[in-house]
Length: 336
Image 1 (cartoon, rainbow, N blue to C red):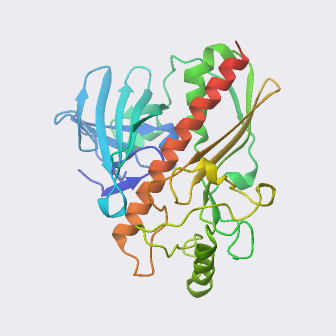
Image 2: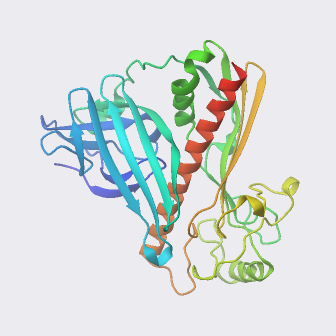
Image 3: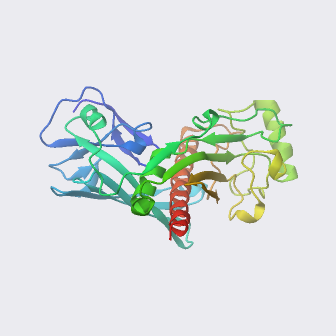
């Protein structure tokens, strides 16, 4: 099999994927490409002989593919587990997942399911290029009207004195939002228009307590910003009590301390959509079980960077699925 094996940390799938590099056609292998993940991940391999998806055991029939994945963060940074149960309908092209998240020995949280439209092909290239099959969900009149600055991740400020210091946007998956609304409330929407004016996910790494703010200011001055993100100096075993740097009307990615369940820098999702002139505004705050940025002053390690990246990806997945479900509920209530 041609191609490079690489660990992929996209916003929706986390698995070992096959990089698409002119792969020859094989009767015993097909590839799956999902619209919502096409920007992040290459298509994944389905081994029809070994019954695996991206190397994971799977149940494969002529009409469906089912597989499971369990992701566990290292205990050195605080154990958390994400169990993902995936189902792909080979007839309709619909992918759905059922996720369960657990921090340490705490309660298990059921995450609202993800829905995406996918295509299957004999090669990675043909899978990615194939038209999405007609969905059993009715199409919706969906317009992405977000401003340009929300379309790509960026950092607002690298200056410690700025209220937006350490606040970064992460890419929100507009395709998954559209597919989720079509699946959940498409029949009720009919030909009504859905316009997305604002949808952004913030990672707020701004200073927390007074002592932590002092440390982070010193870190910014001494070490600069790493990849647009300030590196915290507090050890995972003794994290600070996190609070927003400035008042809500003076910064992006604001949060109230009462919204947090852990002391680490949170993810904040904000979305505004219009359905036939009715405004729907939703906001969600995700408290991660560990810091989403590497701890470095003892020296950056590849494993620490990888752990932080995976924790960030898992957080994005959770918060987006919460947003999609909540908006669908709001719209369903409007159209009752």
